Picture (cartoon, rainbow, N blue to C red):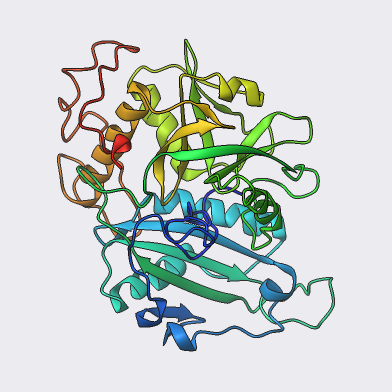
Length: 368
């Protein structure tokens, strides 16, 4: 349920895609949606006029797939990975929409261009469309395809995050739906699990819910993947459990391994997270967000969080703003470039071996 869900880019997109609407936006980005133009079933329409049928199965049953995307410099970050995950969700749903990846990407590109947006939150939804009013879906699908956008700050080196300060994380009673019920790799419009988890936070005012699986092990946040640092590794819940395979999660794991930081994917208890020296969350719009407290226990950021945040920014800079050797790639793919390209020496002075991550000076992860 993690990366993307709402239409507020501070929710944690994919999170919903960004910061809970109950909390006013963490950082004032674009606040008026009426000025935007959305893409609805092949047409560009003003946001105030964008509608879908009340008989659409996405509205009636949550029978739809979606991806939360982020555009940097006019191009979608990790488009290929998002497109693959959207395809996997549709496969789980048996939703044969008949649209090519190029068609879907074109609709996203058209929407960004129509709004003159280079830096944006994007939500791409594909529903099973309007069908006879019964639970069993028809084999023939006339999909409803919607692209929603909202402006965000520039990403990359020296950028400001969409969140306002490190997060507070609270363990909730709501449990993650088991994979045998709804496969965690499916990003569908049915977000009740995350909504119920977030409702529990009204009591404490925490920013994000720490959701456990049916056996009491840590799964993920309501709209984020969870990472923490122990004495000898960067740890995150394994995809063997009911954990969404977050796109930002994958990028962070790749960056850590390139840097020689051991990564351990496994089963962890809430006490493991509470006792960690560093904790941070990831999703498409938050990128990396350090955690200040877990169930009221101080955790704070640290050198590993700081380093990975900087490396993430450098990758975005290199692949979307022309910094270094990564350069600009085509609209349909996001070339992550050579990990040694661009500012390859930017962190050499503070990183001498796999655990000498320095003091992390200069990272935006600790701003705010």
